[in-house]
Amino acid sequence: MTKLGYLGPEGTYSHTMALRYAAEHECQPVCCYSLSSVFQQVDDGFLDMGIVPVENSTEGSVGETLDLLLSCEGIYVNAELLLPVRHHLLARPGTVLAGIEKVYSHPQALAQCRKFIAEHLPGAQLVETASTAAAALAVASAPLNAAAIGSDNAAATYALELLSSDIQSNNDNVTRFLVISRDNPVPAVPAKTSLALAVLDHPGALSRILREFSLRAINLTRIESRPAGSKLGDYIFFIDLVGRVDDPVVAEAVEALSNNTLWIKFLGCYPACEGMKSYQQYQGSGYSNIQQLRGKIDLVDDEILYLLTMRQRLVDRVADLKKDTCEVIDQTREAEIMNRVKEQARENNLNTDMVVKIFRLMLLESVRRQKTLISASL
Ligand SMILES: C=C(O[C@@H]1C=C(C(=O)O)C=C[C@H]1O)C(=O)O
Image 1: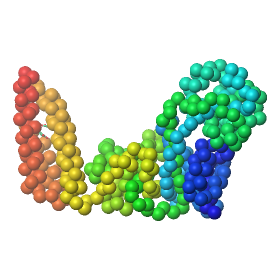
Image 2: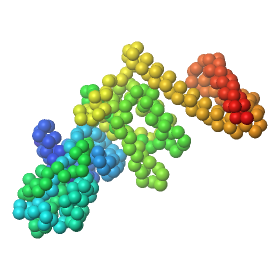
Image 3: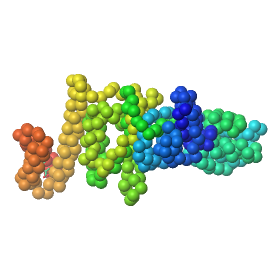
Image 4: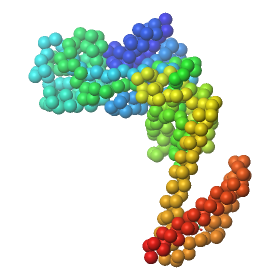
């Protein structure tokens, strides 16, 4: 039978997720004692798959999972799963709320139940444990003044009672899990693709990367930075996008990223989970019909207009600096600009006459605008 590793001990939310997944996919959950052990055992072939938490809607990313996805070669994301997090106050039968002096749990669970603790257990000592299951295990053999915060699965595993149910501050609290394995069959649409990349260290590099996606109407569902682990200020970006890796538009965007990246790592292509917002918005991309193409032309036009606005703002600031001299036209600078754009037009196979006309018009307008601004300020 297919073996599915999860972060134990039994009774963790990862265990709950693994049980749900196993029930639908006929596989056997296997308890592992660290996230790196889940990855290692999948890599070694001892496990066929692993189920690992990657982010929580309240607390953010699980950095260790991201680091392992990056460092393990040949392991890919094959599915994403969402688990609504329901925290309960667990205690041995006979415990009463008023008698609780210690509350055990994982730091994230303690943080997610801050309001309940402040209201109902203000004097209790908070004891951090490695997992919510470890907290339940500790409470199972503790005196009747202790309680744990964890799942109903942990309560069942360690014969504890639910003293209070649904004690999380935020009822929309959801954890996203990834299923990892050694192969990555491209799924049927709708799908998502995950990448990690290192951005080149020059101004505008990240914005150019994001532009490659926006120009092609590719929806990014997540972008997350992690320290590269080398020097302070070096970051790796994790990007999830809506689209299949073999979609020509996605492939073209990824190809275009190489001008602004040191390296790109493909982390997996997997079915988009139905609970994710982006799923409903996925229209399919492509260049195959006139509507799709015109939609993309509209996006490029928006970008041109945005850039014209940015240019005009800069020209206005130059006008400010020219107030004293009143010399608006700078022929040398204009010649430099024209030479540069003519060269780039040639490199990009654009009609140089057209580019020259557009830029002449722009420079003419800059000068007119600057003159108006300067005379208005006098
Ligand atoms: C903006 C300036 O003023 C004028 C307008 C220019 C432009 O639009 O790029 C360039 C040179 C000047 O003739 C400038 O001096 O830089």
